[in-house]
Amino acid sequence: MRCASPLPEPLVDRVDTISNSEPLPSRAWFMVGLLWLVACLNYLDRLILITMRSSITKEIPMSDAQFGLLTTAFLVSYALLSPLGGFIADRINRSRIIIFALFAWSVATWLTGHATSFGELLLYRSLMGISEACYFPAAAALLMDYHRHGTRSLANAIHLSGVMVGSGLGGLGGWIAERHDWTFVFQIFGLAGVIYSLVLLALLRDRTADAGPVDPSGGQTPPIRLGEALVSLFSQKAFVLALGFWGLLGLASWALIGWLPTYLHEQFQMSQGRAGLTALGYIYSASLVGMVVGGVWGDRWGRVHPRGRIRVGIIGTLLAGPAVLLVANAPALGMVLAGLLLYGLVRPFPDANMVPVLCQIIDRRYLATGVGILNMFATLVGGASIYAGGALRDAHVSIGTVFNFGAAGFLGCAILVWRIRPQSTLSK
Image (tube, rainbow, N blue to C red; front, top):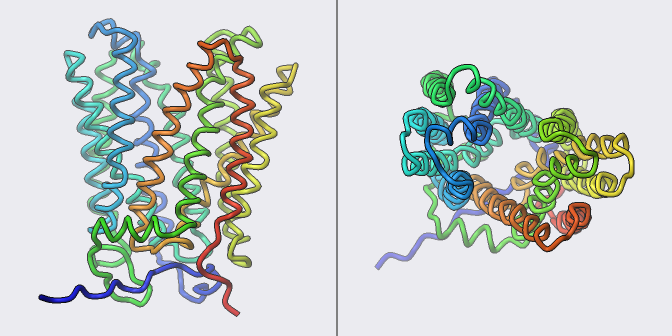
């Protein structure tokens, strides 16, 4: 009986200054551009359904609970399959996983436009959640493979800015449906994704011709096993802290976003449409700036200090808390809007730097798996926080009080991320 071979030494990154002599791959920023559009399509496709509720329910009658179940089915399948999607991306070619995911969810989007019953809609939304679960872990890991210098946070930030643009463009669904038909919206965006997946087939590549993650020593790392990945990740205290931080961050964020339009509608007598546009418009416009600022700042600080990116995340969460308190307690609308701008500016700081921080605290062979686990936890916690907010509302707790709890959550985030210690230190 053969003895199991010992596991390879962990591939944990040192601070970027150690590898500054290694040139940035020529296609590094080109990869960011290619994936930016995929991220945009990812969020656009998942959000267009909720913007066309009236148009869809006119042709496919369903209750409010059934319509809500369409989103729940997506979120549950997306969350539960994210770790598996990440593991597959760690084990085989990442670029092919991305292309497959885009093609699959685009086909599911196109099929949604041909649905004639609630059951078919539920099936296609579940399939979309399964296929989209493979994308973000693989994309994050691929970008980290290309950006092995002091550009990781900025590359990650630009990629995530595509999410914000896609979220904003999701509103086009309702606008197009009013002028054409709701089925046309799903068909046109689904077809666009299928075509773009064929473009990526010719252009998107892993950093090396070899399948699997890149070994900094120049060789190909052996295929990983799921059990090994889970043991490696959860044996790291820093990863457990990052998991708690990411989940609490999702809870605190959704406590605000989930109920902000309702708060503006009730507190300042805004119309429903204006409240929604104000809430998301102020936050997402500021977040586009904040994401890039957080990425640039994280890279610069990370070049000179092993905890530079962590500190940027701490600053973001510490400032997000007071911003939420201002929104919850300000007597004048102008002060509330100032709080929304501040929140939108600083809230992306930890988002821009989280994956680069993971590269410093876990074995990079399991990076996509780690991202998938964080993604799963944040999605489930975020969904639960929206439900909890509704339960508190039913118990006659004011939305302002819910926001105050969210502000306290950001303080807890800062405490958790402060305790994260990278495994590597600056070389002398």
